[in-house]
Amino acid sequence: MSEKCRLCPRDCKVDRTQTKGVCGMPEEVYIGRACRHMWEEPPISGTRGSGTIFFSGCPLKCVYCQNYSLSRGQGRKISVRELADIFKLLEDAGAHNINLVTATHYTRAILRAMEIYRPRVPVVFNCGGYESISTLEMLKDAVDIWLPDYKYALPLPAQEYSAAPDYPERALAALEYMRKLAPRDIFDENGVMQKGMIIRHLVLPGNLQNTFQVLENSVKIVGRDGFFSLMGQYYPAGEAAKFPCLSSPLKPLEYKLAISRAEKSGMKNTFIQSLEKNESKYTPVFDGSVGGEIYG
Ligand code: SF4
Image (cartoon, rainbow, N blue to C red; front, side):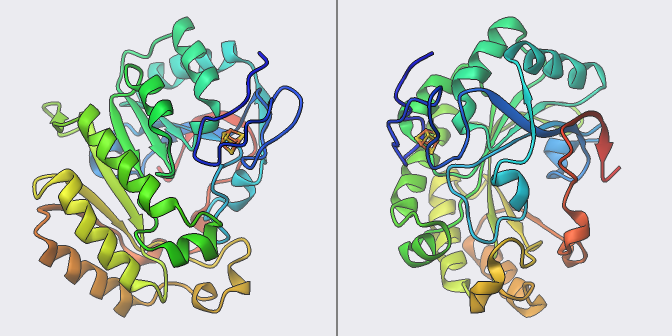
């Protein structure tokens, strides 16, 4: 298909059958791994795991990406038919949902795969939050649960760490739109989410003002009864060592202050992490494999 790519706010307008845009990926689909994931938020992983597909490449390319090699393109090429088969395989393995990780730049292929096989379990769109409304509109009937990152509410870190000074305004508009698409959070009898939205935020060392602003905005988006995941797993990955604030793991005191602010925000459903997980050994291996589970 020859089409100028405008799937995300980078708006590269390139023909990805011929060349690559900021996300670094052609029109064909590349994946780093597909497996059941046991360590997503409890309503996503449940007891049998989330059927997670880690897609290669990324429009944001944060300098500290915790899945650095994956975001820079590591992975294996698969066909749209294989992608549909993977949906089915994960579902047959008992996954509670199909969890599409950083899939924005593959939106067209995902929609084609769903024409071949529409998962019977909920579909989770697990994205960086830097989204175009037109792409969310394309996805609205395919996605049941929106799981966006909300990385930056301030333009300075957005520029410095992701070269995207417009991230705060783009993410705010995208997250508000996702909430419109999924205004209610719905769970099954075991507490596994069927429809809804969870906002995720990775607390960055030395950037607590950004976290505080993210929290203030998030409560306005999802409401006090909405779901928010405050992630403390940061460790210096990728090019983080070049940035003084990012060159060491998140300090327990910083995470504590972030938790305290989350409590004060009035949000009743905030997921908190154990800081034991902020090590590189918890980064999955992206060998292109399909099946099995991680962190079981
Ligand atoms: S998906 Fe990739 S090529 Fe398309 S606009 Fe975004 S960064 Fe550019």
